[in-house]
Image: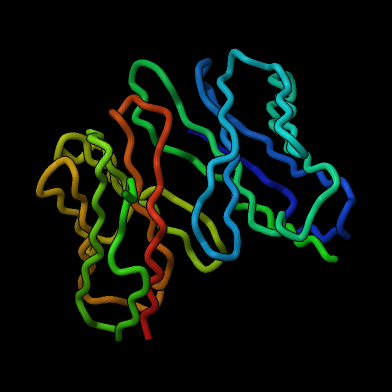
Length: 117
Length: 113
């Protein structure tokens, strides 16, 4: 069985602060993908990043960066110099891949990030 | 053109009614999904169809019945609506059942009064 844990439920920061959203996952599979999605107040799900289990390189995209560590089964997301527009619910998710996989995305419970001006 | 579309976007109805939510994708994908996001924002898969065949059926009350008339459509019919069915329902599609990338629709907010 797969499980994604986002222990933080709500985070509130002041604009320009850095913030890290934690994600810990459990799976018995050796091949899997991890995702982060953003859900702004408008409600749609916005894809942010995908990472496969064989690629532990950290990734940076503008103010966003992701730290994937298989040793601790974590895939954390950092927003640098947060902005009000970053206020949203952020979901970490996992999907199996390979023989027998059925594309079932398992989501964490989400972290509500509020960025105050 | 919208890749994955859902109708309606909002649906308000009374307990006991039967309602349907429609989903269409124009990506030529083989696989479609329904996810439910409850009032606590928790997202969980409900069903998946591959080439009109049911391949994922999570523990969902049998009042929920998905129907896939063709590969491009996956509708969700809900009988005897209950208050607890109030949620946002997301449709998604992927190239195949083995694909890791899913494209989500905008969601349908169902409110049962």
